[in-house]
Image 1 (cartoon, each protein chain N blue to C red):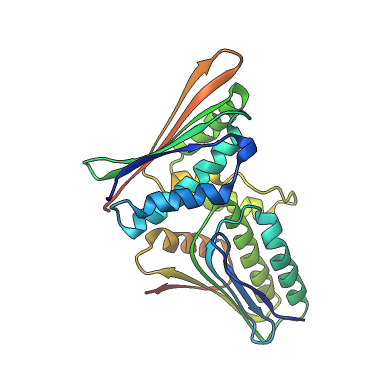
Image 2: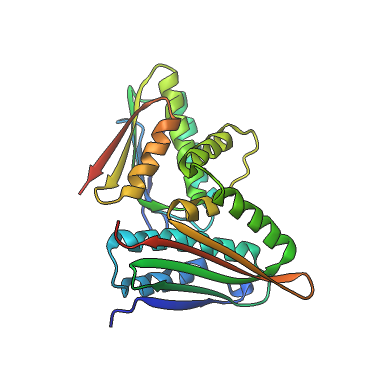
Length: 162
Length: 125
């Protein structure tokens, strides 16, 4: 039966297995009643969100990934993550730099060029850029918990039909 | 110099680099678990190729999608081909995208904008 929403629990970091996570997602995506281009976009955003979850969450817990489509023809990908406050602050800063960008593509190009010209060959840092690039609206929320830990809610949406 | 041929997998693209014809083709999906390990032999091969490139060099990127880490490596491959062009050798980049994939077309345009080389963006069915 075709389903237009699902949730995936991401296991503890010590049991991390990227291939398994991607394959699980591919299976779920195959069952979605959406276009091939929407499926591809879901996969791209998902890959970056997954890497993000792995990077920012605390070591020993589960994360939740949720996908839903609504009656207005919009796909929303949500991740709910348990993280340390210091990491959430980094993520929040990056998120709002992109959220406030007046021209995402221009900023992306500039960043890519700067990276290519930099002597420092440090990789990464484009994950959120990709999530923004492939989505039309985004949400970031944080809920503080004791012990300098927080719950991070990240959501990226895009219309199914453009 | 030997050809570099790597078969595609679920997460990595097919590589077919031929120093004699000068055609360097990368095709498929690119989201390796360890991008640095995956691209290391590719970058090493291109570096060696730069020393004695074919009369005509073409980098063909025929990608269905790639992740953010692969993005940087793919761009670096393009920069190497640009260096061949800068040295006065005939070279170009061909960016192939599925005809209904607007996102991949735009990504090609972004790469093109940043490179000073003959850069062809081609829709395929």
